[in-house]
Amino acid sequence: MFTGSLVAVVTPMKSGAGPDTQVDLEGLERVLEYHIENKSDGIVAVGTTGESATLMTAEHCEVIRRVVQIVNKRVPVIAGTGANSTIEAIELTDCAREAGADACLLVTPYYNKPTQAGLYEHFKVVAERVAIPQILYNVPGRTACDMLPGTVSALAQLDNIVGVKEATGDLTRVRAIREDCGDDFLLLSGDDETACDFMLMGGDGVISVTANVAPAAMHELTRLARTGQREAAKALDAKLLGLHQSLFLESNPIPAKWAVARMGLIEDGIRLPMTWLSEEFCPQVEAAMKQAEVL
Image (cartoon, rainbow, N blue to C red; front, side, top):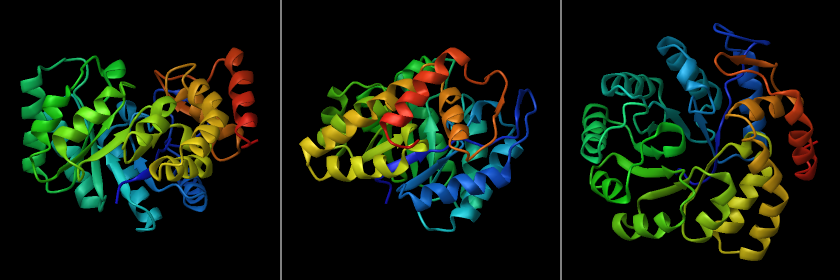
């Protein structure tokens, strides 16, 4: 169910870059319809790319509810509900369950740097408290916390932990996790630049930032890679490489929001401490968009 190109969708906001920039619900509907029309295989709402760190709890839950309503079961909806507080993660995950999300994506607790035993207990408690499929999310470059394959393997024994988003870019982990967790455990890349190889090695898909800008191409890339069409997948991936790289010239989602605004889908709104893309990087992102033929 949760395979292919799963877009880590931006959260549209009204124009501005302040501490209370308002979520744009009309823009949200416009973006979601664009993704469904352009064959994104699923929507990941209010993840890192959706500015989860700066949305208040009520806003976070409301965006999930609206995404579920707008999508209306046309594609799966995965809600970002991770937190560095276990009780907050439980609360957000339960909000997503009540809203009707198909699954939740839970990032490793950031900043407080738990041990592997702490990670296991954290995710175990959330899984036990909230009856919804849950996908682990490992992105140590952002959280300063690396969940090792052995911990993933232990958590995979829990019924409602169904997969992992692995965003280290370390492709050796694909084989290690697959061998330990079996074919039914979802392996999702969280790194666009290595996602093609990740899927060619047996991964099930990618939770993608690039798909915000090139959803149809990312859908096709995942199809080619997952069916073993190496040469065609590699050729398409080369066309998207500029986006994979330029969308991280500044902290995600800064470049992605600029690009989606450049396409006319959203206003130029972002919430502090994120700021709008620096002018020096705009030509690089635009060039990558032209290379990918989305402009």
